[in-house]
Length: 558
Image 1 (cartoon, rainbow, N blue to C red):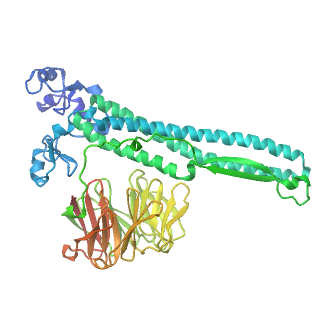
Image 2 (tube, rainbow, N blue to C red; image 1 turned 60 degrees about the vertical axis):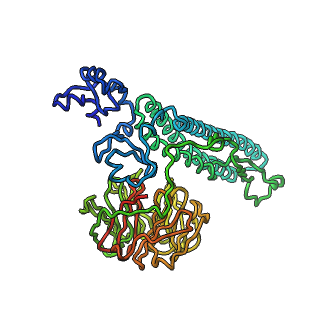
Image 3 (cartoon, one colour; image 1 turned 180 degrees about the vertical axis):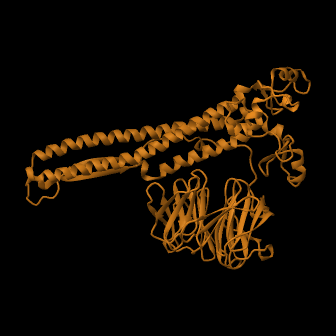
């Protein structure tokens, strides 16, 4: 994209290398001074909108990388398909979207997008997020200040109390002072960690606002329309961040006070304390702005909500595998496949099916999960009662001991949720390795868990259960009449749940509400002991591994 911006596209076509001075979004190429004049004079292009190349380059790289032509057919986008939520060229419509009914001219869809309610709403939402983060930061800073004032006041009370007693209480005073400082330091650290996260989120919001301003000034309507989806995801993540911290006890208002020991008046020789540090925790009283509570949020486009009956699978690749007990699989962001087997090996496979490299953990390998943001691979170890985090960049490892068996695992917001077998459904914090039990019931060993939005999905026997991120029950579906040996579980972008039957050699899909299901694949589709499956939410692909020999990659059409 860099050379495309800085070199005149017309001259380059004539094998002349001249720098561009302006950019035409409709032609999708740069123009030198001479070609700029011809461009402005030509009847076909005189109405095109151009911008100085230096100004256009201020757009974020994600926006500059958005192509305005179909990469598959090298034709301009002319249609927008609401069903698949994507732009299409003329040939795309014929080849892929012939059965789609909600097809609109893309010029109609993107007309006046920068002045649309959705664009204005996004500007307001970013401003609201920034305001709320500032409010929370100030509230936490004030709490630090009040804790310091509490500490100063208590110091004086302790010192005054110390005057009333004799020298043998020196050690008791020292102990109590340490308790006070430790209490303040503990809360200060918790609040400071939150403040650090808030400041990072504020920087992200400011960057989004700057990007939105530049998009508004310099991006084409199509780029603006497509970029809004990326920004909306950032907005949603930051809203969830605020909702999460408001739900947790980190936002409780903490204060400390001092109560003098009444027995000090008699100064008994066996006195063991000078007083007690008292904690007072109450809910925070700050009020945040929330436009969603005042009006319905406007977003474009309105996408079709797919059901399990809309599903169509197209087999695009069959791959031979290594190992005889494959336990879990995934697709990396670059399209490579990765899978684990119980012997302790993790294999990475290129997109063409050839092997890339193998990782050896040195212990039993049960399930895996790739965290894209940190580029770390999380590996569970079954009965070894530990979780290993492998940095895929430098191949360093960190071991987390959790005190229970570990199988299926997923990641969300700094926590690892995992199948602890008889220990139930658990979560371990990556901040301090602390473990929380969310569900007490014993989960099926060797089975996966899945996550979508604020829902967790796990397997007990031949039934699938859905709960929220705190373990609160949502629904349960018994599948024993249709599927035996439930092992793998994954969820797509619409909340539809896919479950593999290791013994029944099939895959079943469940509706988001857990009320209906249908058989998706069976032994007739070459399934033999399918132990794991993975849905790639970025590319709508379903990856299924038999316990040995073969793996299958499907395109999922809604």
